[in-house]
Length: 173
Image (cartoon, rainbow, N blue to C red; front, side):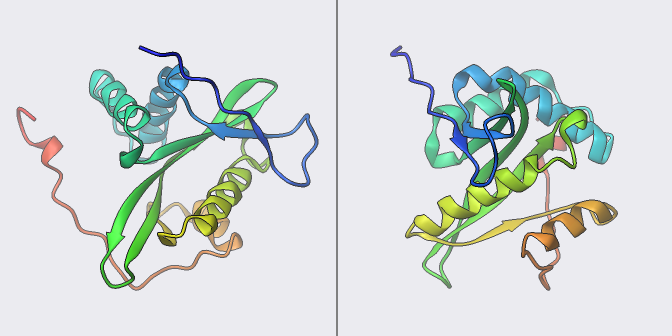
């Protein structure tokens, strides 16, 4: 298997070199991404994810860009935050909505601009992508702090409710 070159880290405008650096995640980040996803699921829903399934899910995105991509935030050379983008086709708009998912920032790096930098980089990439028609995310109803953060970035609550049937929770899945 050919070795993938690590993408250069992006410095978010207005930040010094000692602040948050951003880059696309690589296969080298898979274990960290899975660990962060497991921590996020526990913190937000008290849900314990199957580690093997989670690891395979993270690798599936890293191995196949058509599924989406992860961005990571670094401080002092260490990954301290992540965000995943997946695509949803909108026939009404003839374009993709970019869904922001798997957001996690390590507790020691929260309230320090890490998510804001990840979001702004995602927004900038989306604006440059001709097929992107907007950004979306879902958030726990009771996570008032997250609501305020998303609204401060210019996002607004929609009139839609989210429904699902989660086949992965069926016995034997």
